[in-house]
Amino acid sequence: MTKVVCVGVHVLDIHVATVDSIPEGSSGALVDTIRMSPAGTAGGTAVVLSKLGAEVTSVAAVGDDPLGATLLGLLQANGVDTARIATKQGVQTSASVLPINGNGDRPAWHCIGANGSLTLDDIDLDLVRAADHVHVGGPEFLGEGAVAVLEAARSAGVTTSIDMLAPGEPMWLDAIADCLPLVDLFLPNDEQLLGLTATATLEEGAQALLDKGVGCVAVTAGARGAYVATADETAWVPAFAIDVVDTTGCGDAFSAGFLLGRAEGRDLVAAATLGCATAAQVAQGMSTDAGSYDLASVDTFAASTSPR
Image 1 (cartoon, rainbow, N blue to C red):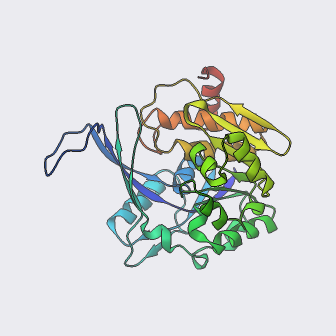
Image 2 (image 1 turned 30 degrees about the vertical axis):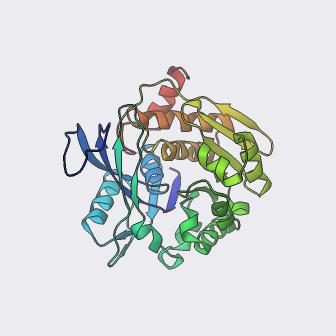
Image 3 (image 1 turned 90 degrees about the vertical axis):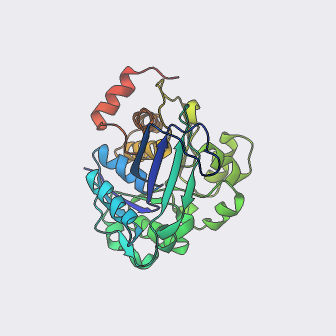
C-alpha cells in the first residue's frame, strides 16, 4: 500500500445546491441540498487518495471550533489518519461556502482561517521521510516550511508534488521559487498555470515550469482533460464523457489519481488517464468526497467509458 503524507491546506466545504440567484435583501429561497465535505489542495487530495486505497496521513491545522471537529470527523470517516493535524486555539477552521448552480459551476466564499497558521513546528519531518510520496497543498502558505518539507522528502528518496491554492499571478510563483527544483509533480489548473507563468498556452506554461526545475507538470483543463509534460514527453489526455453534477474537488481528485499512478509506476499517459477517471467519479456527485469507488473500479471505468 502506497504511503502518502498530505501537508497543508485542509478546508471544510459547505455546499448549497441548486443556486441560480442570490436572494435580495433579507429574503430567502429554497434549495435542494446543503451538505459539508472535507476539501482543500491537501485535504481533498487526501480523501480521494484514501478512497483509491493509499495509506494517507494528513498534516494540517484546524481551529478549536465546531468546524474543526466536523472537518476532522469527515476526514476520519474517509479513512484519513488525522493524528498529525494540529488544533490551533482561538483560530477559525478554514471553510468555504459554495453555491452550486444548475450546470455544476460553483463560485465560492472562502475564509483562510487556520490554514494560515500552520508552521514547520507542526510538521514531523521524520513522518515525511518515511512516506512513499509527499503532497504539499498550498506551499505558498507554508513559505520556507514548504521548502524544508520538500528537502526532507528528497533527502530520503521520497517523491513530491505540490498544488497551489493561490490565484494565477506571477507573484505567487515567485513566492515558491525555492520549492520548484524540489518538486517531482506540479499540479495546477489551466487558469493558474497561465497566470503564474504569464504565458499564452498551457504548453508554454508547462515548459516555463520545467525550465525552473520541476520534474513533471500535469495541468487540468476542465472538459478538455489534462495536459502533461516532462523534459522527455508531452501529451493531452481527454476527459471522460459523463453527466456533470458538481465540479468541486475535481482538480484534487485528478491530483490524487495522477500522483498515485506515478507513485505506483504507471507511465505519464496512464497516470493522467487515472487522474481524469478519478475526477470523473467526483464530478458525478456533489463534493470532493462524492462517490463510492476504489482503484480497481476507477480503472474499469476508464477502460469502458468513452472520452469526450
